[in-house]
Every structure is written in C-alpha cells, then in structure tokens.
Image (cartoon, rainbow, N blue to C red; front, side):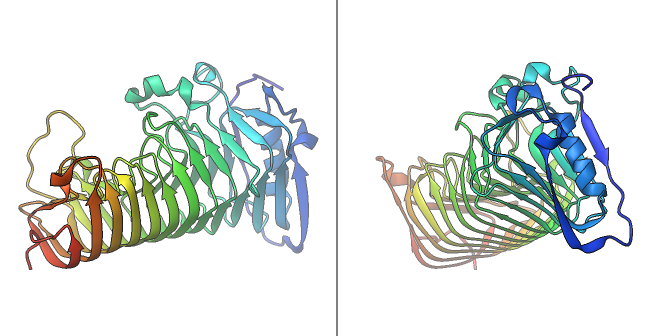
Length: 398
C-alpha cells in the first residue's frame, strides 16, 4: 500500500480504435478501498481511475458506493483517456486528510482532488455523494494562502457536475480553470460564514458554462468569475451566507484581463455581505462587458449592487491611473430588502476609465434594520440610464 498519505497521480493516454458501444463500471472497493474513514483509500481510487481511463471503452464509470466514508489524500486524475467519456459516480462520502497530514506525503499541490485534461467527464452524486474537505484544520492558517482547493477541474472540456454535497473546503470548494462547455447543477455547498476564502465555485479562463439550481452557504463568494471567462449563465442560485456573486477581482498587479457575456438571473441572496458585485484593482487593463443581472431577489442582504474599480482589501493601496474597462452592464428587476449602512447602490468607477452603458430598470430595494438613510444610490464616474428605480438613481450620467 505504500505510505498512508502518499500523493497519487495517474496519467492516461488516449488512443484510437476504442469500442464505442461498450461500458464497464469500476467499483473502488474492488480495487482495495476500505471506506472506514480511517485508512487512506487514495491508491485504490487511482487504481480504479487507471483501469477506467485506460480501458478503451466508449464509456466508463467509476463508482464510490454508498454507506461508506472514504478517507482520501491528494489525488490527480489525469487524462487524456482512451474512454470517450467517464462518469465518476459518488454515492458515499469522500473525506480529506486534515492539515496535520498534509505535507507528510498527504499532498503538496494546490488541490485536494484534481481532474486534469479529462474530456467528457461527468461527476455525479445523485443527491447522495459528499465531499468533506475538513477545512477547519486549515482555516486558522488561511492568511498564508497555502490552503488547497477542494475540487479542481483543469482543462476538462464537456464537463458535467451534479447532485453533490460539498462541505467545509480547505479554500475554494470548486475551481474551474481552462474548461470549455461545462454544466454544473444541483449542488449543495456549505461552510461556516466565518470560514476564510471558502468560495463555492471559482471560475477562470473558461467558456460556455451553465450553473443552475444550487444552494451555497459559505464564507466567501458563492460564485466568483475571474479573467479569461466568457459565456456564463448562472440561474436559480440561493446564496447566503457569503459574499454574493462577484465578477473579479480583475487587474491585480496591472494584469490585462477580460470577462464578457455573463448572465446572472433568478437568484436569491439571503443575508449576504454583498449582492451582485464587479470589482477590479487600480492599474489593471482589459474589460468586463456585456453582463446582465436579472430578476435578483434580496433578503436582508448588505451592499446589494456594487461596481468597485478601486478594490483593495489591504490597509493601504497605491493610486494608479489604469483600470479594467466596465461597460454594458444591465441590472433588471433587482428587488428585496437590505441592511446596508451606507448606500444600496454603490458605483465607484475610475476617473480615467469610467464605467459606461450601465442600465438600471425596475429596481425596488428597501432598507430594513433602521438604516433608512442607506436607501440611496452613490455613483462616481458612471454613465448610463435608470428607469423605474427605488431608490432613485440620479447619479448615473447619460
């Protein structure tokens, strides 16, 4: 079995001539997985992956059976595979090794479970499967930024993830990087509201994604969309607690970043720190454009609508002229209640690269909790239009 916390990496190469009409199921317990929550089952998981990936079938399935808890150290499931598509079915619970085991053979990368260059991958839980990152052992150290993402998909085209419960990630629960065409649905993601950087889904350099019908309660953004991302549709997400849904942050350290064609619709924010947010650093370059937030419901959410081109989480920040250009942003049918102590709508746009073509229509946000003065809009360097809005938005310039 080797070291109990040995990092497992399996690489598979695609070949021609696979049998497109057959399928085989590979049960991890048949490869030695015990599922007692104490013995590291990573080697059994990677052996099952090797068999499924190298089989040369049209489709392959790996199954993690119900009724068991599988302790798993860091794994990299690498392709490309001979199978045209692989389904990874999780019916039991997969638990990460705690922080004290990491670095002792339990993992040395930035992800607990990584799928890399696997095409046609489906990770499904049928409402039963659980990923438990045991993040509490990591959170006190999070400021050092050395915590791993719980589940990362890297360069996996035609990806599907559904029917899973994700809890207590070390850092991000799910990261999607360099993926084209992905469908994410019916996930339940939870971590304490005080847990640091436990984003629900973090997206970067990816195109043509659909995320729908998920419940997310975390200590950071429910969904964060970063540079190089386009063509994302987010719908029917219940978010809270957490920091809301964010575009960015973009342009850190002068970086050129691009985000476009983003639709967020029919989502509910419950007691979140923010609602819908676009944030970028001073000195950056690129653009965030063609973004629509439609039919958004707020329940005692703080900071409902924010564009912040002066984003800086540090105590002091340098003043820089450049900025990521923000344009073509629509807020349509945003309604509900806020506990904001300052402004309900707050647009802080760059003096040198102002926000343009910002559209507000059918906005109805009311203050609760005795902060009546916060029911107002504040804008700097923002150009656009406003129609049928409560509070009134007189600060955008036409």
